[in-house]
Each structure stands twice: as structure tokens, then as C-alpha cells.
Image: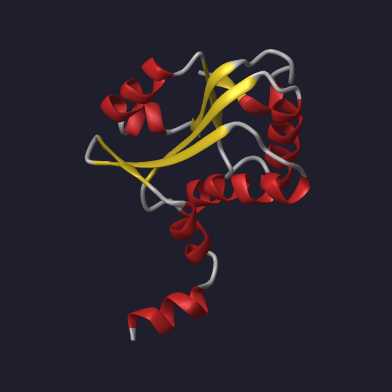
Length: 133
């Protein structure tokens, strides 16, 4: 796993996995399954880096047109890792994205796909509260 923010934007191509840096240690089986699918694997810890830096980096990487598929994956229940899934939306606000993008969380070493709708709802606590009442 290479650090995302110190990678040249022209390096990745094909299928790219961006995951929380702790995922390999905390959910090794889930990490291994996703890493096998990827041509490039990058780690990102949003406890040490600001999300805006990652948005800019991934936007630049996607703009090269070399990435066909982008996978975001995190451990579940981490407030810092949850932000990693918001990068997709922020990049799409800046540009047209042609790459296929998917999201997963890992729990008990299993992978769970997460829809863009779920990610968006997680950002609107008021709406979530109304839905649970």
C-alpha cells in the first residue's frame, strides 16, 4: 500500500483502491480481497490529512483519464474513515467523472457495499433522524 498524497497523479491506471491506512491491519481478509482486484492500492488516513487534500489529489488523478475503476474502502464505525467516502461526491462537484466508482466498508473481515445514497444520507443527520422516528 502506497500513500495516496505523495503519489504522482500520472502513476495509477486501471483499477485503483483507496482505503484507510488501518484497514490492512484491522480487516486483513477484507483488505486482501479488494487488493487482489486492484492494479494500484493507496492508503489514506484522514486523521492526519485533511479531506480537501485528498479531493484535490484524486480529482487530478481522475482527470488524467487513466483510472477506469476507483474503489473506496474503509473499516466501519470510524468517523475519520467515513469522510473518505465523501471524496467521491466532492470530486463530482468539480468535474465530470467517467471512472466507475464503488464504496465498501469492512466489518468482521467481511465487505459490505455502500450505495451513494447511503453515503449522502450519512451527511444529513437531520434527515436521518426524521427517517428513524
